[in-house]
Image (cartoon, rainbow, N blue to C red; front, side):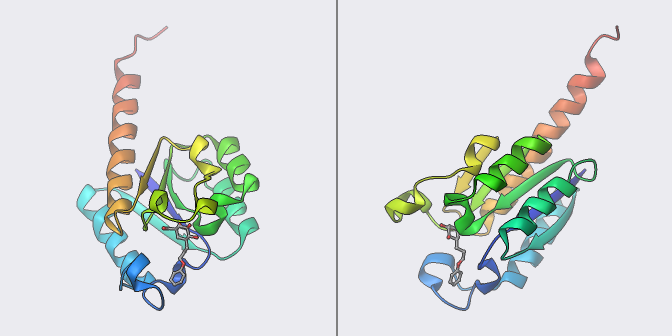
Length: 155
Ligand code: CA2
């Protein structure tokens, strides 16, 4: 089972500023945490970070046929990007939205999420643990789906 973990703009700045909102750990610590979580769950995770909206669109499109699901933290593009939503809807891969901070408790302009309608679940305010929860959720969903397919009567 192969999951693509996508992080959007400024997430490479983790640990450098605003530790009261995003914690003290760096982006490379997040990558190590995600890698360890995937290993524990017995799945494969490939991680990418970009500051560019079009690159996120490309990475989502290129996931089709290569990955079984996507964990995405689109950063500030969560609140603005119809292009990323359209890419997610186009590939129709099971997707989970993750935010490190407690977005519902923050500014009004962060209360819109375009990507949410293409996601099976949104996890917010759990720090790095949210990524592990997202991986575990996708693993359960994909395992259930595979079992359903095995049990379905053949035509
Ligand atoms: O809570 C999240 O994970 C966010 O997706 C993070 C985004 C923010 O725009 C979303 O509303 C919620 C910001 C990415 C991190 O930005 C940093 C800025 C300064 C220092 C460290 C990180």
